[in-house]
Length: 85
Image 1 (cartoon, rainbow, N blue to C red):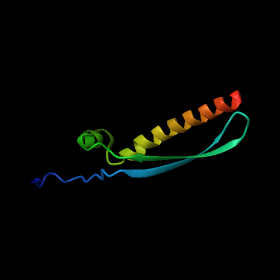
Image 2: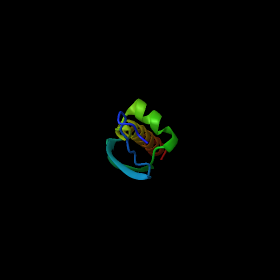
Image 3: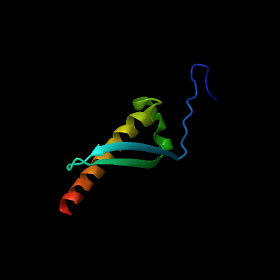
Image 4: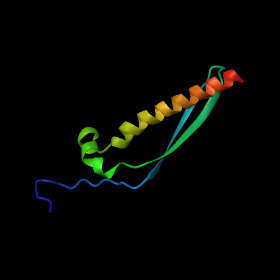
């Protein structure tokens, strides 16, 4: 039972798909279009901590930075592979 001072905060903990496109230039001045697709969901037992530290827009705050770092590492790996060829 929830008291009248509290209000319920409903989180969706189902697995969701998120796509993040990125246009990147590599060393030889070619442009690469990369789209990263991820499946994500919050861990139910960590929801109180997630809400307290990040708020309701935790997906935008956390996933955006993770996606950018993953895409940078993919492009870097691609650059190294192209240099070796």
